[in-house]
Image: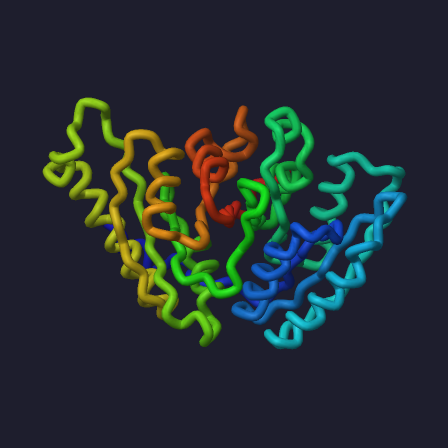
Amino acid sequence: MFEKEAAVEWSWSDAPLVLPLAFQPREWDAIYIAFYLAEYSGSRVYVTHVLEGREDHEFETQLKSDIEKLSKSLSVKYEFVEVVPSSQPPGVEEIAGALIQTAKDKQAQAIVMSAHREPLFRELFGRVSDHVSRHSPTKVVLVETPQSGIAFPKNPRRILVPVLKEHHPDPFIIAAALTSSASVADVEITAAKIFVLPRTVPLDAVEMAHPLRKEERDFSSFTSFAIKALGRLINPKILPVREVGGDVAQFVKDARIDVLVMFSKRETGFYNFLTRDEYEVVRRSPCVVIVTVPSGQGP
């Protein structure tokens, strides 16, 4: 049971957020989410850009104008930070290191950044977001775009918090932040505990399984704490699956989910800091996936 959950911290502080940008069009989702998190927690946003030699300013002016409009609409304070690396052009590790150092210098509580699916060889070695997630002692929020053309809806109506292993408050807090505006007051938040069925258990007998009933009781208790702490209606659900990535993606399609918010414990391995199941959920999702990574695990 979850008597100990009364001691769980169900909010973020008003410490700053660091938002790394390369001033590319595909980063808008991360900008939008970072500013909504800042509005919810009362934080300042440090929009951080690591200079990389030959800069392309084609989109920078427009993006800065859009950021100014968003900040005014949400009454969020922000400022731009330019970081000059020691070498030009800087490598992936140097860029990641500069972002992590900026978060330390600004005493930020989180780094919120864009991440996009890449070919496997680049995901293993090349994504700045993965290097930051592996090594930052500050919590990291990744805004993953699994497929080209997918965008975060301005007013999401259905949010799914899939819980693969550990129950953690951060995905619930982020879901609450994204629904804090009066314009999305009727949003539906579903928290789904993913339960992987053994091949020998028939689907039509799943409700009779004792382990599943216990999971349902425990998860409902955890979700009730989230509802009381965050003031949001959250529908708890047990989602039995055979194959995590494919079955969760199918549920997302069938339920017309607009965005996923999930927790990763940062278990570095072949699939980067994600477990295989987490990686497959992100890779196969038909919508934007927000992955929150806890603090205190960097070097």
